[in-house]
Image (cartoon, rainbow, N blue to C red; front, side):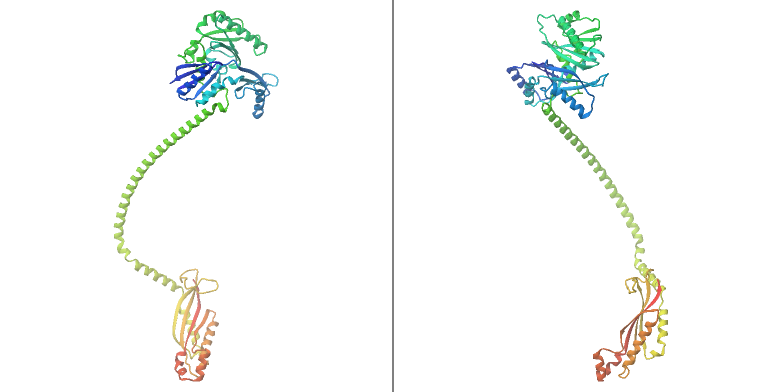
Length: 520
């Protein structure tokens, strides 16, 4: 349902449309009974967003010229004019820039429109707000009249539009090149008045007034369109005829109703025509009113937006849930297919593994072969022959004829540190390590009570002689032929039987020798 409140300055008329077709109208007088009936009406009807169309005598129109400016300067100039001419109108002021002057400093031409007595509308607005009815906007009938010019085939230049919306008023508006310049509403008493003669007088008075204001040149043509009720059509057509610089066209109200698709709107006057034009206007939000007048409508829009968002989220959630459901079905099918493929691969793997079991059983032998190959590679880099040759050359000297070699333990060791410290954890076959001969020499020297010192000296001299060899890196005496501790010496000097029995055991010595090998 669509609804429009038409206010003529006295009575409020409500127009209804259902599914795009006119459904009816109601009238409410500004009396206590009328306002009570209006409140009852608002309570019984749904609070649909509604429009308000005003057609009152207390509406002023002015064309002013302002210096051409931009942005905040332009706004300041406009606000200054509003405060100058329409101080009491509040938010019920509207302006439109209509181009620039053609000469001089080419100032901006601005049309100002305002309700000079907005208090007469406020009681109706309060009742509408108390009923929580959203108001989409407040339109001015003269400003809205520009939308009917094309249906009247009114061209450019000066155009007069005379129409009667209620029984007591006639409105005459002046347009220039399709833009409203001025408009005024005058009262008429239909009883005992020659309607055609009254319209003709109003046209001439308005033309002279505008010519005196230089809004129209005395030699400019005027295209005049009169929308006359059927009752007075013949009177107007007979009296108002075209003349020099006056081209008059008289239209029946019913014919214009058909052109604006407002058939069915009852009544002899043209208020239904402009109500239909206002109802069909989806471009402008209105001409008058402040934030407080449209707060309910703004709340209504916010609710619609939230409702739309909720619907969109619900639809999105359903689409997402559907997509996830079908995607899960697809993934389950793929999972089952992967399971079948995995089972097939495992079966083939087990078959191949059974074929490889004889080969895998020989992995221990393969590891032992690899270890043996590493040992061979390590031994290949250094041979004990070099060490034994040098050792034999030293022992062949007559100085060590008392010494007898009992055992030599030889191995390869490596050093990876700069100070030459042995590191047995470094594999000997690493190419970055230095390989060394490491031998433990065990031997005996005859020891008696008379040659204890000679036996010890023989071992010490052997150690010194080994240290003098440039290839030998380190020599350590691990064990001497006799115990050189003070307790041992005292026992030997006493010549006790226990000491004599221990002499053969004391003749054993042990040396640790490290000799350089080649660099790995």
